[in-house]
Length: 164
Image (cartoon, rainbow, N blue to C red; front, top):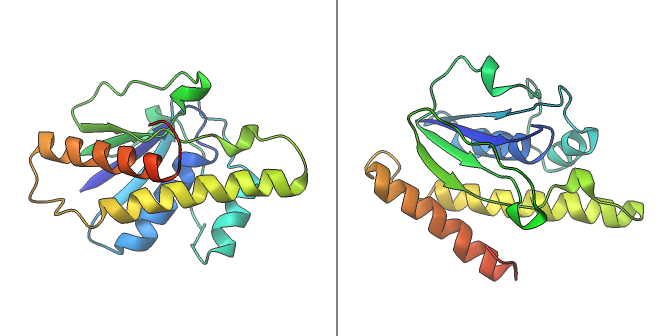
């Protein structure tokens, strides 16, 4: 199964999700990330955070969805609608789900507050990816998979005290 994590800039959240998914799934499935308006650069704090968690960062890059050489089976957008972010709409054939999480790249404040924003986003995405990987991905219909992915986000958002 090919999974695409999609956001606007592809500098942090979708990179986190791609790296965590590929780290946890080993070789069963594969994830990519892209942006509708990719910044062309991964946020350095994203790479630092991934490395501190023991997750490989080699090959991670900010790229446009126009540059993908793979047809995704699943597309998960990670834009934060609650913050008024415009989330890209993937028009290809794929199961779609939305896991809106705040963009830590926009965090302001002290170094500790910014680090906490990156940690919170990383933790939220890691929990969602881990829950996704407990699903029988190859056995679910498209509708069942889409519903299951949305339920994961809804449940975890409630546990995190956020509005899904």
